[in-house]
Length: 169
Image 1 (cartoon, one colour):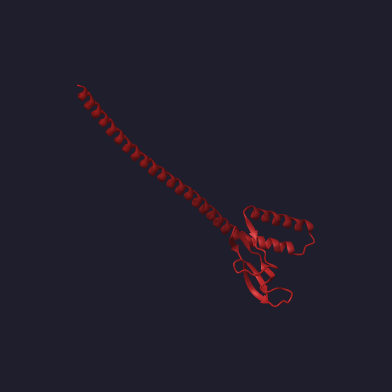
Image 2 (cartoon, one colour):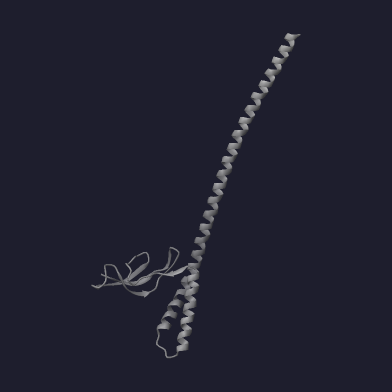
């Protein structure tokens, strides 16, 4: 009888050990599944974050492109306002009106990220300037811009209209 109890106890211990081993295998398997799921989740989160950044950049580029297309159409109007301001007139009210309209126009452009390209006194840069002639001037350095015929403009890093200039030396 004692031997039977001992055999039963051993059998029971053996079953318990087998169950423990099986449970440990299941736990290990589930840990691996959890790690794989966490890894996939991290990858999906990173891909989504990259998608959001790429989408925001594309929207910004599209906005700038559309804005530049619209503004290019208004630049001749701006040029004419600047010419009107330079015209001789004895009517000060008229001149002040032109100045105010020109200032308002430039303020709207500035508010939309449009900047004038600096030219006179700068070194010629074919990315920003278009040279229509060159002159020899001992007072100016090589490839220095002497005169500007038409102002150029940029939005961000995109040139929407090149400056037309005269380059020295």
